[in-house]
Image 1 (cartoon, rainbow, N blue to C red):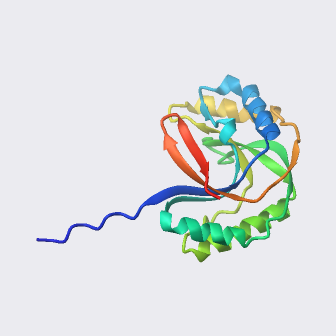
Image 2: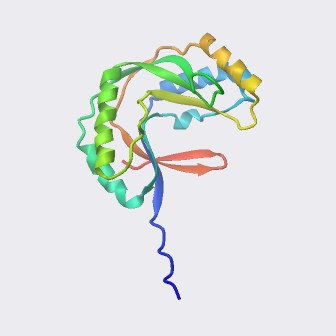
Image 3: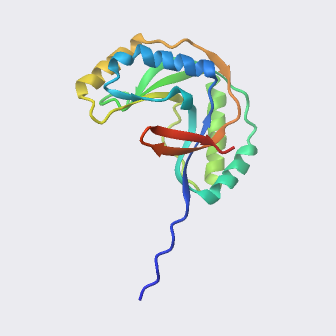
Length: 191
């Protein structure tokens, strides 16, 4: 008789992000409304949960939450002045998957904060995304049933919608838990 399989280690779906002021969330909701003619093509992000993701960690062993928080506390996180900028999408060509708002302002400081967090994430043994850091706030994701024509029309509409260049000062990065539900993700700050 074989040994029973070991119980899987408990995990949490995690990411590290900067929170956004309510004024910025209101402007992002206004941008979504201006693009609402294309609502059949995308699923809009809930403005209440909008944030600036610095690292998406995915399913992470629960035992690493405290080491991540300890490492994050060692970072001298500067207060960065950031502003909303233009709209864009991923990928930049081809079939659109994500609509986002880019940022301007202290992007060098934001990159330095990102690199400090790379060190923290790697120090606890987690992989980091090898792609270049592209600071953005996600507004919408393409619906699986969206037609190529609907997605092309949405892509063509993006340059005409310009967010107000609201400026804010960032606070410390936060480790969030993301729980996926049929109504969308629920984000819980862990520290």
